[in-house]
Length: 342
Image (cartoon, rainbow, N blue to C red):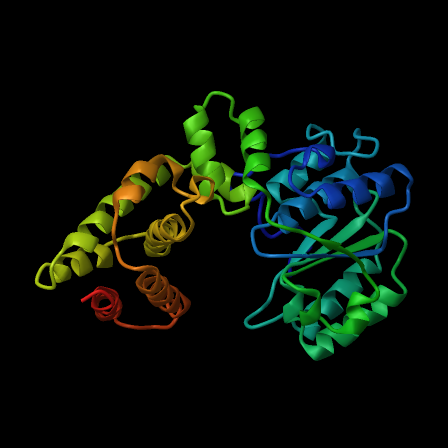
C-alpha cells in the first residue's frame, strides 16, 4: 500500500463538486449535511453494484474534506483538490487487495501511518476498495482502529453488499447505499458536461452506460469506442446469418479482436435488445437505441434461444481470466451459440 492514492482520477471521469455529483442523491445529502455541520463520521461504508460511482464519490468526498477553499465542498482549483485529482495527495490513501484479498499486513501499515497527523490536509483518508475481500485477521485488526480512531482519520470502505462483510465491521460504519443511475439522470448530466455533442450521442451513451455515469463519460471521451461498437454490430449481423461452413471466419476475426471483453459486451447487448423487444415491445428499454430499427427487424432466435445465447456469452466471459487457447475457446463458444438455433 502506498501512502497516497495509487491511481489518478478515474480515466475519462469529469471532476465535479460533491453537491454536483449526479445519481446518488442520498449520499450527497448525507455528506453535504455532515460537512456543513462539521459532523463527519470516522468510518463510512459505501455499498452497491460495480460502476455505481462509489469510488468516484469517495475521491470527491476526499477533496471536500481537505479542500483549502471550498468551505464544505471541493473547489476543484486549489492545490489540495489538484493533488487528489492527480493521485499524489499524501493524506489520501487507497488500499486494494493484494492477491485475493486485503491482508492483515496492509491494515497494520494503516495503523502505523494513522498514528501520524496529516501532512497537508485536515483529514487522513483511507479508502479500502473491495473491502469485502478483507481476510478475517485483517478485518479483526481493522476493528481496533475503527473502535478508537484518531480524530483526524476517516475510513471509507467500498463493497458490493453489506452481507459480504463481518457484522462487527458494518456496525462501526455509517452505511450508505449506491444504486445504478437512471438513464434520464445520466443524460441530463451529460447534457451539461458535453453540450457540444448531439442528443443522439448523449442518449446512446446514457442507454449503453447501464447505470454508470463514469462509463458514459468514458465512452464519449473515447475516439475508438463508436467505431468498435459499429464493428461489433456488423460482425454480429453477419454471424447471425452465416452458415456453419462460414462460422470459422467469424472465429478468426473475433480471435484478433484486441478489446475482446468490450466487443463481447456489445454483442451481448444486441442480443439483450432483441430479447427485450420481442418479449415486451417496449422501445424505451432498448439499450442500443440508435440501432432500434435494425433490431426490430432482426430475428436471431426465439426468446428461449436468445436467453441461451446470452448465457453462453456470460459463461465465456466469466472464464476469460483462466489461461486457455483463446481461438479454440472462441470456436467452442460460437459453435454452441449457432447450435442453439440449428
